[in-house]
Image 1 (cartoon, rainbow, N blue to C red):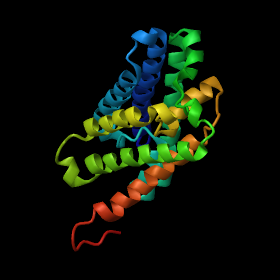
Image 2: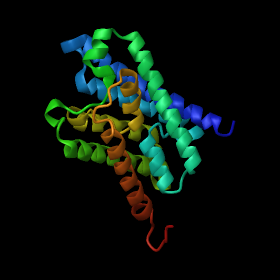
Image 3: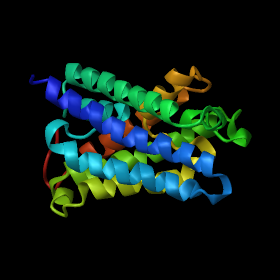
Length: 233
């Protein structure tokens, strides 16, 4: 039960994020010109993540993202076995959300939107470096905000953790959604890719977010968390 509860929280929290995000993309596809576009999609992801962080943060730490779990692992905030269990739970949560959305929405919308898989724009599809760089930057910003609002005691005192993290996802989608789909989260990409059987460029949506997350985590842990005169392990 010690591991079950936090893993269940990771599973449920990832469903919050992925169901809201995928459903918003499919809803926008169904509504066409009358839909909310990228703004509605960004808000759906951001609001869902904000609620999930506040609901489950006290149970699991509210990662909901393999890149975040690995960032916590490389800075010594979680053990390897627990990180592995979290990643499995996150991928299962994303897959469950994708299956649910595929069952609810019309097949035409699912096909047209590719079940909401974060994918590069046609003009960026052959630019592997661009895809990597954008996903790296977006995840770097996300993990920096996580450390600043939910790890750093100075940031936690402001008490905006879940809201700040959700806002970061929202503005990341607004900034990078038109280029790469703005995944920032290997699990968010994995679930719909598995259900639809579409793994084109999928490896980039694991490598780039994990790299961006680890760089952000190490920078914050080793530089920004230090106080003057304090040594940090």
